[in-house]
Image (cartoon, rainbow, N blue to C red):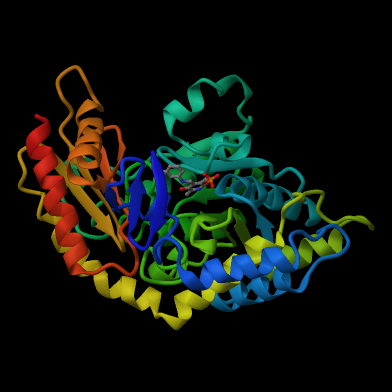
Amino acid sequence: MLVAAKGHYYTAEDGRSIYDSFSGLWTCGVGHGHPKIVEAVQRQVAEMDYAIGFQVSHPKAFELSDKLLKLAPHGFGSVFFTNSGSESADTALKISLAYHRAKGRGERTRLVGRARGYHGTSFGGMSVGGITPNRKVFSAALLPGVDHLPHTFDLAHSAMSKGQPEWGAHLADELDRICAIHGGENIAAVMVEPAAGSTGILPPPVGYLERLREICDRHGILLIFDEVITAFGRLGAPFGADRFNVKPDIITTAKGLTNGVIPMGAVLVSDEIHSKIMDNSAPGIELFHGYTYSGHPVATAAGLATLDVYKDEGIFDQARGLETIFEEHIHSLADHPKVIDVRNIGLMGAIELAPRDGAPGTRGLDVHKHCFWEQDLIVRNGGDILQFSPFLNSDSDDLAMTFERVRRSIDCVG
Ligand code: PXG
């Protein structure tokens, strides 16, 4: 049990100070309890705890939207606020359908995701997502009309890659095959994480995202980047779209938008999508979609303060500067006999352990437990894959300490 958090550390119930190698859950890039964000939240909750967001609104929702759009790649014109990454994913999918319908192309209803993709736990994101255990219990009720691109991981071709693997751009061509089967004119949107996170960090192969963009353009399909993890500095840039220089039509965010302090997400859409929906819908409500807590005043206060901290403290540049140091530290484990792969991009990284015979996943879980109980370190594991999401404002010593402890735990668990 964790009972307190400050800076880079949690306090456990037994009083131990525990270093957080995962920045919350990819959320708290500038550390826990940043004073400027805490103060903004406290001030806002006292001033206006809630404001109805249907027909009326409040200024901070518009201020935050303006700030996000200034940060976004050119051509993004509006923001839809949500309360989580899952809601952002579903919102983006619904906006895609609404856009095509507004254009008179209501037959474009099919969706494309990717194997090992993660887009949250709602039916839309789960259907487009491709992490099998998250899908199979619910498979009878998943959305129809969804196809999946293959994932881009291949140990034989790209083990121990640093940054984007050289191999794998051709896997984007699978989208052409899906278009050939269903008719590209029937596909509404393709949703991918620009660098997959939750599945155990899969950086995009060199040229892969560019190829997806080109195929989407050729068939009139919208490209959605799920940037719930990759936005706000995780890749040393405001968005993954900036880092990879590929512009999607819709960007989904959450997590780092408020540094994890208050649940909030935001979906950024291009001018073209917004104006088509607004101009071509029947009179009345243009998009039948919205949440009680969309643009919640306390969340917007947290979001505004967080974006200020990113700017005032030069966080994105700091993260970019830390990338090669992080790469060196995480790859220092590459020679370990129990490690079969190490991969990284920006400040996202994974160490994949060799599974134990007949007991896959147990070695990773044991490392997690050993780190927590014996080394005062939180390490996230997905089965045998150890995942790292260091603080955007951490330093070389933090990283050295993290990976020394991880090595010791891998040594100890057998
Ligand atoms: N999209 C992406 C890319 C995510 O990473 C979601 C959507 C859903 O967000 P919410 O806020 O609804 O949980 C996520 C969430 C992990 C881990 O261990 C990652 C997430 C959630 C839980 C665990 O990497 N990402």
